Length: 105
Length: 436
View 1 (spheres, each protein chain N blue to C red):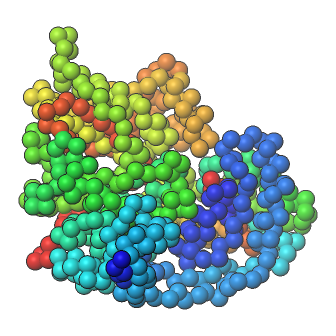
View 2 (view 1 turned 180 degrees about the vertical axis):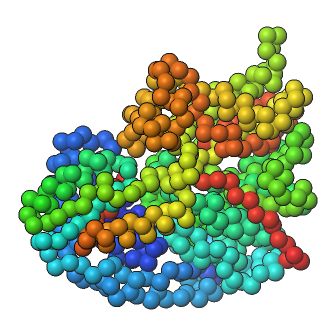
View 3 (view 1 turned 30 degrees about the vertical axis):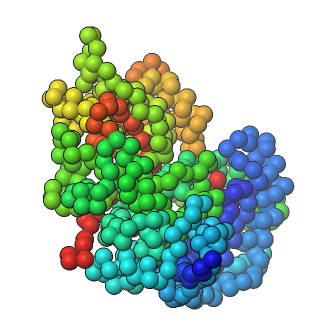
């Protein structure tokens, strides 16, 4: 059977990979923010996560998702980008060392 | 770091990569949280999630903070050599195809397609979400070859990619587990020139299936939507659909409604969640056929529960698009009764109603967002009528403009079909031929 040579159908890389932010050594005495997109029962899961983390790290401070804006089901890319930028600024202002983002299902 | 449920952690990682964070830390909640009660959620969080979250926030390895340059691939690189069967197997094994046999994308065949565009093979047409990969005439042609298109289809597919890459199209939002897939509407003189089918059985005749398939492959390979990894339709997807409006339509074609010249050849990308039933309105002694058609459209719209989950009201909410397919006799009947397309849209908007109590049921038990109609009224998302009495009949559409009317299909049949689609808006681009 005749063999033929073929090329790839894939798109080309357009995004430079930056890597995740530097990790923190321990959660002791740190501040963690919660980002929620308003769906998939994050309102039930985040309080449990919050209490479990505080139990394990008594010095931990958590900034709950209610202190950050969110726009569930937002299909507008420009306003999504602006929202993400505002949330990042807000997390810094509130002293967050790390952020937990959820829920995705 | 990110929390996702089982089956969606890959999506979270791919989303991270598409944004430049290939080693995103993901904690996986076991199972489907939507079906878990508060006690089960607490159990799973404590037993399975907390350790992952702590590790994700504190474990240092990989290339944290360092970045990594991705290798630029030569599009002409030979990735496989084999028989036609072996090539199909190779491509399917890598999720580069849709399970059907492909036409081998050889360099010679791809170059044959490229003769039909004046664009440079490596010119960037768009960066397509969700993977944020670059589309070029070259890789669009590769997918067109695979799908079984003809070389002269390439300009049409390049215009389709321009539409997919337009933020209005919101391509990055179609990965939903509700199963959203694109349709391609081809308009203007190119329909006749390429022999695009627009009459009976149009989506499954002539060049339409190959064109639809090509768009599906482009969404898979260039936009990077992989079933089960980032393209999460619970029951999967049929092949993408290619449509064209019938020449016997009594109304101006879609692209003219959108502000394009009648003589322009255009491609519109829309989406749908379904390819469904096509009931037939009849003229009867007690009701004219046009009135029956309007009422039937309203009844069909009411079956599309996505409309209730996704109100598409307000500047920063979900988008919804509803496509009404009308066969030519139905459209002519409506036009003869004095209805324009805008009139039909207004009628359906005003008359597609349901009991507020039923709307509340849908919102309470089947929507992923935990809210009520009254809360949405207070937030300014829903109009005041949604704060009324349980038996009040409320309008379920956010407005007439989310309705899009296409006249197509069998010119001898009186049928309609309603296609609901979420998260996007139809996006139209002009097809440019090699000579401009």
